[in-house]
Length: 170
Image (cartoon, rainbow, N blue to C red; front, side):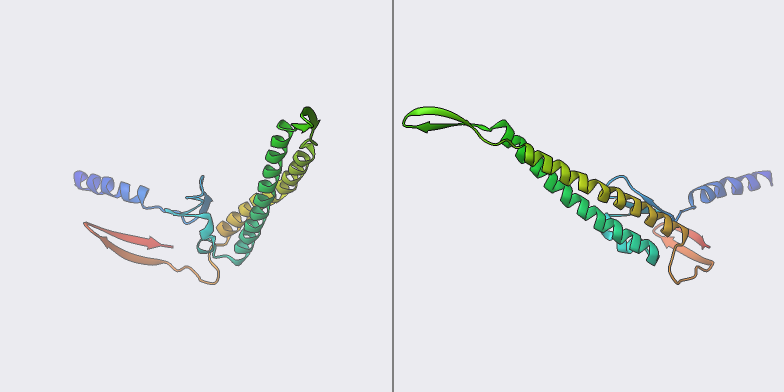
């Protein structure tokens, strides 16, 4: 009898410890696995599949818009800084008048560098706002999962390949 109880207890231990699958949403570490819900991984562009709460979806749309604006300002700013640096490094040019070499100085690229830094400075608050709205969306989705559907307790028999299992959802 002791062996029978011990065998059942040891066989139920992996079932209890590995069968728990969380439906909470968390952020991943890369763009390939940006959202992780349970054991499913979603890209950033698939946020409409992930978020079911309308309030969380609106936060996510704001985050997407702010992220796009910050990337545009960052790219323009980086381009202006790069072009200004190239212009500053290569600003001396030689001009020939009647066979005589005269060195003239071009206007430097410091104005372009300053404009690029300004564009990046404008993009930073948009990036911070995007991150804040993204965290709000994930928090709101985890607080109130689902929209109008009520979750009911259910049992389901899963048969896959060589395995069989009983799933209990609550």
